[in-house]
Image 1 (cartoon, rainbow, N blue to C red):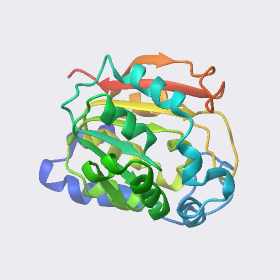
Image 2: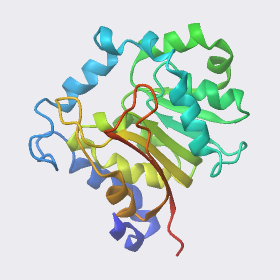
Image 3: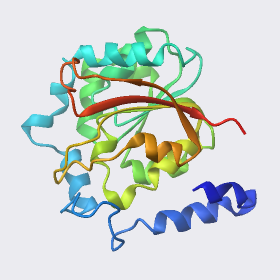
Image 4: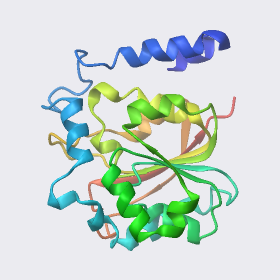
Length: 233
């Protein structure tokens, strides 16, 4: 995507559509063997996961959201729009709302999780904008540089190798920082291991902060927390 800077502005929407097409079913995964099931199977699982990943189970581990706040604090203004990819029940967004962040959005594939958000965090649900659908279908509809912060927590690890084009889309919609708190090592049918520093620096971002969340409940030694800003040009 470094070539994107050389594409004339009027042609960029068509170029983005072509780039996404490269990641549609039938193209080769970028990490051989990292996913043995289809993108559609992954989507089906996260729309209606098993008991280990039900939305209600994501309300309790508040230590993760506190960790997120400490990571965001030095880099994010309270009045900047924030996008979370995969908010699930909304625990992270609720912590941001209570901390004073004013403009919150999320992309969430599971309508059950959104219903659980309304039940558990009604004040959040009445003020947040949630786009219900797979990130592959939503992120391309969002404007360029619309968000001061784009963040994920244990979500990018579940992105199918055929959908890695969304990382460039995250950069496109961000004018400030991208924060990833992800398992970078596990490899299962739902987990693809990746080095997010290499990915986002390859897309024109610069890592400005890194933290080890090993001691944070529910994260662990396979996770890395990273903060990226746009490279100065």
